Structures are given as C-alpha cells and as structure tokens.
Picture 1 (spheres, one colour):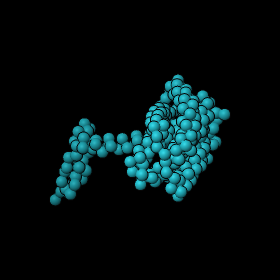
Picture 2 (cartoon, helix red, strand yellow):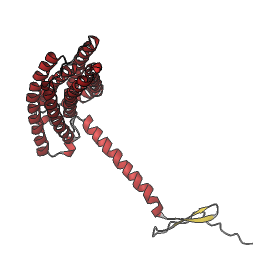
Picture 3 (spheres, one colour):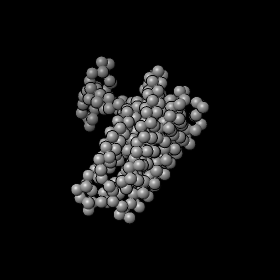
Picture 4 (cartoon, helix red, strand yellow):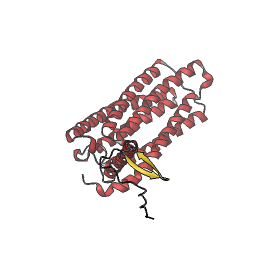
Length: 284
C-alpha cells in the first residue's frame, strides 16, 4: 500500500497576479485582487489626510502659520500691505463713527448707541493691533506674533464688554427711555453699512493669510455693523410700541455678552499657543 502525499492547503500565488486560489475548509476559493482596491484607496486617502494635518500642526508648532505653505513670498507681502491699508482705513472710519455714536448716545439716551460707540473704539484698538502685527515684513507668517496680537485683543474684548454691560444694565435698571429722530436713523444706517463692508474685507484678508487676528478684527467690525442696525430697530420699535422700551438696553446686554464670550475664548485658545511658540520668534 503506497502513501499518498497530502496536498498543500494553500496554493502558490499565480505569477500573473490575476486570480489567487486559497483553500478554506478543504474548498478552493478564488480572490480577485481588484476587490481589495477600494479598501487600499480609502486607507491611502486617510493616510494622506493624517499626514496633511500633522504637517500643518508641525508648521504651527514650529512658529509659522499655514499661510507659509500656501502663499508665495510676493503674494504674502501683497496681502500684508492690503491688511495695513485696510487697518488704516478702519481706524479713520471707526474714530469718526465712535465720536458720532458717543454724541448720539448721550443726546438720545440710547444704550445700544453707547454700545456701538464703545465697539467702534474697540475696533480702533484692534486695527492698531493689526498694524503692529503686520508692521514687520519678515514676520508675515509668524505664529508667535499672531498669537500675541490675539491675546491682547482678547483682553481688550473682555474689558470693553464689561463697560457695555454696565451701561446697558444701568439703563435697564433706571428705565431710561431712548429718544427717536431722523438723526439717529441716519447714524444707524451709515454706521451699519460701513462696518459690514470693513468686516467682509477683513474676513477675506484673514482667510488668505490664515490670520486669526484679522478674522477677529473682522468679527469686531461685524458686531459694530449689527449694533448700528440694532439702534435703528430698537428706535423704530420704541416709536410704535413705547411699552417695549427695554429692547434697546437688552440689545446692549446681548452684544456685551457676545463680546465677552469671544474675548474669553480668545484667551483660552491663544495663551497656551503663545507659550508653545515663544522659542520660535526670530523676526524681531
């Protein structure tokens, strides 16, 4: 009686690579390599996304913003100059608006006008910080300089919000009634439109330069625009419904809380990053 050699449970791979037979429970199955391609492609895409995230994180950890990868040197300098011009324009416009709004606030007893005036003054300070941020051409991609500017903005936001809240709460407690006239309407419309235009431009530049400080400055201008129109809305409501006298002060409280929350978030986000990137500041 002759012994027969048992067959190998797994067959040798086909040199062509088209069909590979495998033995499972004594039965031979054929596995098409094309079935493995979707899983391989998804794994490769996930790996690429992970690599891009790691590269971005490593760049910021190394003291540079993401814009250093996306922009050529001449493009970055062009956007930097535009940011400086917009900041100067914002300073001039918001100084005028702040003076007018403070005058309206005291003449018409408007809490929202006072809040807008204070926000306009805050916009002047934030634009000055943007000027400092981009005053050094070599520091256009400096993450450390960016985070310091945002930290200063966070402190200014918190202090300004406390003043706005204090004035609005005082007006609500004393039941101060706003006075309505055509002058107040004109100031509201002009202020709202100018601030929203400035906000859009700052957002666009902030996105191009991946600049949190420019986006924050744009947010402040956007809040100013909303406050400008809120003066108009609260005055119009009070004109037709005197019982809703508290709307003006309530808007002031809400805007103060929004600015306070944004300022606190800025500090929580930026203070650790300032410490993390302080050893990479080489531009001064």
